Image (cartoon, rainbow, N blue to C red; front, side, top):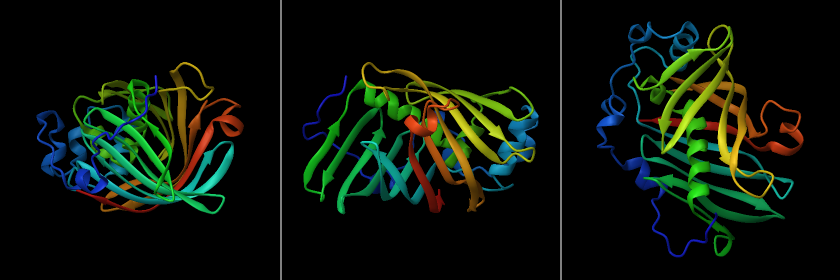
Length: 263
């Protein structure tokens, strides 16, 4: 059930970016350990190809990524342009802040899931509340979002607790637990290991009504390299992934990554 926030404490994007993880389960992500492809030769061949394509040899394994992006988001069945910035810090969570334009007016706000607390706060002109929400369903859906976005922070997928299963000649699945939710990311790759699609079951209610697990996915249209990491830089995302409902009903987010920083 979604609830209204009342002066809930918030972790800012800057706070999350500057923070340091003390969780030993984050190791080796917080140590800056150089990526060594030889450490992953026990994985299925597709998993090896993905990781070695996504992370250049000797690149420090990062615990955080900061992304600057622009694109279009679908609200009330209408596409609106937006400009945004996001920080994902493992294993704490993420903060995404953005400005969207509706009828020429800016709607400013943020989505966040940090330390198990999720909230959505958006205001017209930065002053008048448009959307404020929290609760268990919001948190579970946000956890699925972060799981799918780990392709922007592929160092997390180097963690020894991630299990890899090759499904066929072009798909490999990464399974792990993150932010209180099980994750099973199905990655579709080129023969060289470049990412083409991401699919997962995400908690949500795109049809309205009760929340439940729904197929969610991303189509990657371009990749780019920043600081030794090759990540999706142009993508389309939405519900009902893999069905004929994706484009007319489920797709709601299109973005281009302008730059990315890691530490």
